[in-house]
Length: 343
Image (cartoon, rainbow, N blue to C red; front, side, top):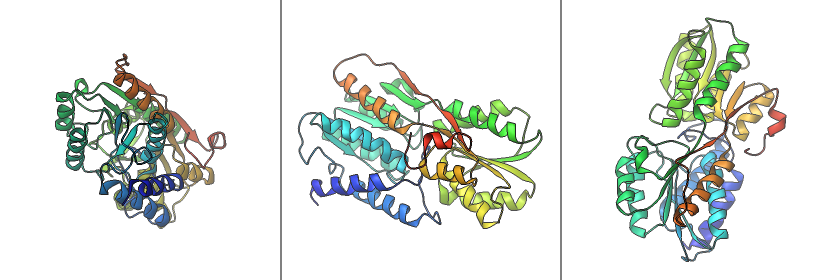
C-alpha cells in the first residue's frame, strides 16, 4: 500500500479515537467501547505493516525521526504521535512510527530496524523499563540520540534526555483527594503495571502519601489494560464486599474498574481513580462513575519531546530530565478541562 494512503488512514483514526490511555496499556476486550477499540486496532495494524510507511508526504527528504511508543492501540500514544508527526512534517522531514503492541522484545527488534534505516533520532517509551536496554545500547553504538518520553528507562545513561510527567506527583494528588473522601482504615485496592517505571512512580507517590491511612487489601497487575483489569477488579469486589476505592495506575485500568462496578451494580458506591486525564475518563468523572484522575498532558509531552530531538540533532544542549506537570481532575474542575480532547 502506498505511504500516502496510510498517512490518511493514520491521521483519520488518530483524530477519531479517544478512549484509552496510560502507562503502557491498551484496550483489549473492553466492553462498551467496541467502535473505539476497532478504530485503534485498525490504526495499530496499519502502523505495524511497514516501518517506513508513515513519511512526510510519501517522500524521504531531510532527517528521519522514529516514534516508538509501547503500542499504537491507545489514544494517549496517538495524541503524542500527532504532535510529533505534524512537527516533523512541518520541517519537511520523515516521520516513522512502529507498533510493538506492548511487547518489549518486538519493540527491540523494530528499533533495530529503525537503526538500520539510518534514523537521525528516536523517541522511545518502553514497554519494560529494563528490557529496553539492548535496543538502547544499539542506538548508543550508532550515536543516535534517544529521547525517552513518558516512561523512564532504568539505564538512564543510555538515553540523551528523559521527557516525563511528574508521575510521582500524579500518585500524590490522587492519594490526597481519596483521603479527603474516605475515613482512615478504609479498604482499597491498587491496579498496578509494575514493569513500567512511570507506573512504579505513581504507586510510590500514592503509597508514600497514604502511609498507614488506608488498608490496601490487594495490589494486582492489570498491565495497564482495560480488559486485563476488568476481571481482576471483579475478583476484588467479590472478595472484599466492604471495598471503598480503587487506585488504577492509568485510565485504561480505571475504565476496567468502572466496567466491573457497572456489572455488579456498584457504580458510585466505590471510588475509582486513574492517571492520564483522557477524554473518556473525564466524561465519566463528569457523570460520577469515576472519581478522579491524575492528569497528564500528552500534547505537551509530544511538543517537548520532538523539540528536544531537533535540538540534539542540531548539536544543542538539552536538559537530562524535562518534567511535565501533573494535576488532579475531579468533578469539581472537570468542566475547566473539557471532556472531548486531551489537555
